[in-house]
Length: 260
Image (cartoon, rainbow, N blue to C red; front, side):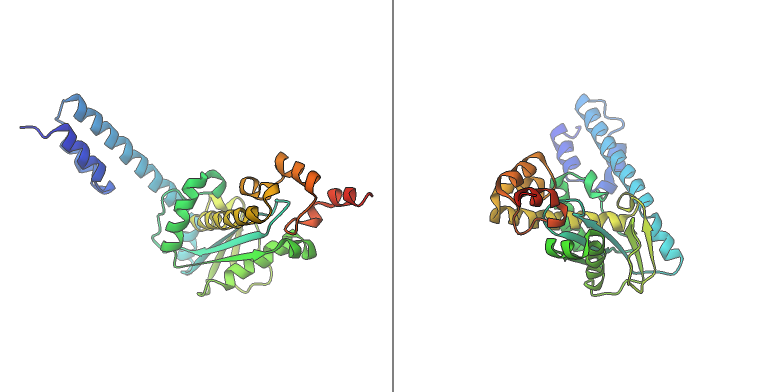
């Protein structure tokens, strides 16, 4: 007697991804429409998985190259929040396990918010080490956004607890560090370590801005995260600036307030 379609479906829902080829093979002679559809579903699921593994292998190119050159503790580093009108600039540094293949890791801008939240927990749980750097809006005004970004990156590196022997950074070469490094243009989409750093930095800063939204509710920081959305600009015109605004980014508004 043939196994029921309901039972086959239960197996598919519970099966380990690596067992799918055997599962698909077991259904190849079952001509029932329900079984055929489940086999097709399983094949699509497995094809999606294998495509993702290939993408992650490609995303590990720079890390593998570093290992071939004798480096083992490779930190990816990225920043978020260089462009907003308010809030800190945040960086993250991440050292991943040699065999890390975290599904979904990519440039944080390409990952939906709900997925970023899930990946945040996976990344920090699987990382060999991770750390954040945060530089406030006041210090951004004092030393400029580029220097603030570099400072936050150095904070993240020093906070790792384990000193990396190589750094992969998104786009920049970080000054005043004694660790070999490479800046990779659009590195958050080309390096698994930088991509992981971009995701946890984004989630970390977004959570900060959501807390600031409770303190300064008129600016809608929970939605715009400090970026210059239409709502945010209108709120600045109506209410002026608040303590977490970057005054150096808002000179025109400040001059208008002071009647210049």
